[in-house]
Length: 625
Image (cartoon, rainbow, N blue to C red; front, side, top):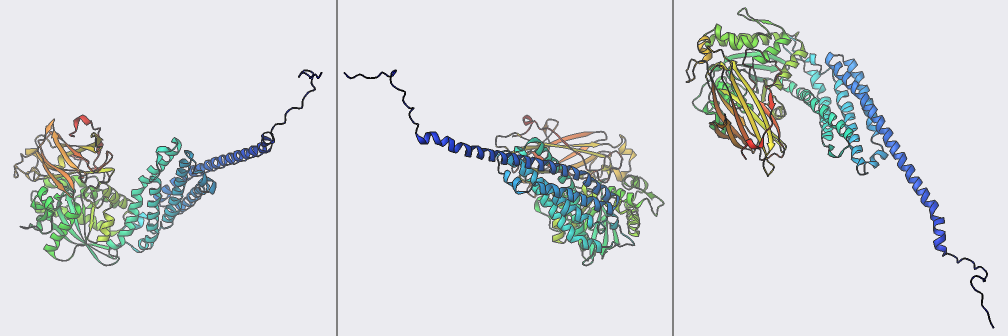
């Protein structure tokens, strides 16, 4: 009988062999995977350390560049070009180090990594822009410093030496182009997705470049324009228009006197002076005046020299004034320069006091009061007043031409006057006018773009007198998006105040009060105010004291205009609010320009002080939708 062994009695069986592939793969792949992971980790660690260390070193270099930049600015300001050159070289080395540290292949490769990449790109762009400014802007300008030294711009023996400026033109032009490119590269950085420290640093650099832009452009434009405009390529004739802000016009004041200035090879001479009343008037327009301009300001713009600048469009006013001069005297006018006694007070800081034929001493402290107030108490006849004005202008011009004037103070006064729109320049040469059009010197109508609305507030005297010496002006503006279509609404508040003494009607000369000639009570001030809205915008409302205010609605150069009149007795004040719809803009950003006025209290404004524009918050419940 056959028997069988139970599992318990049977000899042990050998364990079943596992499939070869299942057992061997881990043994073969595990070391490879580990080494791959180790290699990746090492590379990643190396990359992190590499980028971090180089980023830290770049930050250190940029931090060290700040005091070098400060030393460059201080040295230029003091006229120590040697120190400026040494500081500029140090600045270039520091920014060059930062640019090199942030532009190697590893850094650029890591820029492709999400989240961290945009931050590295931003840092590299900022470092490169800083290096561009240091190596291609500051250092070349400092090297050309002896040619464009502020003190070298002074007129000596009636002539300005133009050769150094001409030689510096290529270097300055390249520097201006490089600066514009560097500023644009920083402006193109989207800071919305960046880490806060990086975004803050980019914003600080952006702010620094923005603040320096006017100075860079002013230098570049001056070096580009001055030689030709001062007769380096042939003689030029300019009409110098003296604006009187005691009787306001949109660009600054009634044109009370004019003079013809001849420029040739840097030599500037005053060849002829005239009272504004001696030119014209005409029974028809001397120059072409757009129909819309005539509709807003009347026919006087093209017929009376004193009223050519009722329009705030200075290129139009200047071309009209030039045509009036040549129609009267013949010859050619290559450009027009307008300025007021506030500019004269600034020039007197550079020249020092000048003595007048009348025995008066004209100083920076008394020029405005003497020329815009005291003269009317002293002389009753306009011819006597005109003679006094001509004497003052001639004395200052003679002093400037004699030389020995502090060039730095002179240029500072002129730059400040340009910034505050108290000096305006128009050139009959098209290429020069294109350059001027980009500056505050052009005095064109306010311009807008897709993000920012350009607003203008302009004043014209309607009293027919010199009462605007006592007129106080104030402008406040703001914008908000209050509509479903996202179009912003702009609100502009204009406040006028009559600061004349209570008894102005009897205590001030008739020539100052107007004596009621134009239907204005003596002592009162009547002003026509034109508020310009943004290009392609719409006038929504003009209000005062909670109700609608009488206005003439018009359009000028594609801009909506609210033109209204305010009359004030001594001590009175009124605020008029104008609302626009910004049809072409996508953000509530604003820029506002105004007619330069006097404080109204007898004080002299600083030559560079602009009429302040206050920012206001706009409540959507208060705007017309």
